[in-house]
Length: 152
Image 1: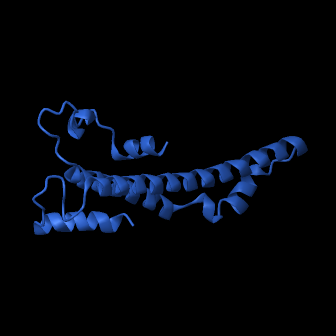
Image 2 (image 1 turned 60 degrees about the vertical axis):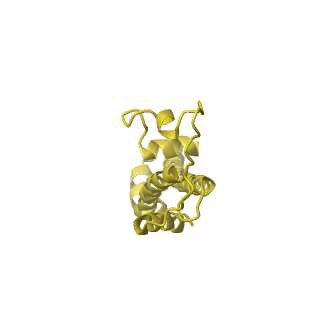
Image 3 (image 1 turned 180 degrees about the horizontal axis):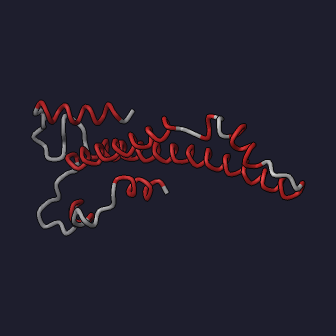
């Protein structure tokens, strides 16, 4: 649901369908950019929750087995983790990691597109522009850091 908005904005920029009104690209307004950013952040947060769930499950198995080994005196944790737990789908999730990277890329694309959708401030307006409020490129957080901050 995020990609079509981004594709529409980029396609309209490539074709040159920019409306005369400032801040409007192919009939989209700044609110559409904000909604797309919010949807992307929500999607990213859900992906991180899923990753954390997998990590917590793996750690839970390890802790349970550690306590079992401590109580019984046996040493079964490393072998059980290697043979029974490690092959399970929740212990390795390359597709989820790929989806997280795609979400970060989408956030970068959407924020770049949304910056073209934001209306220009009126003359005499003392509100700093979006670019001024973010600071220089050295001060801006990376897309992943910005997503994590918004997701928290």
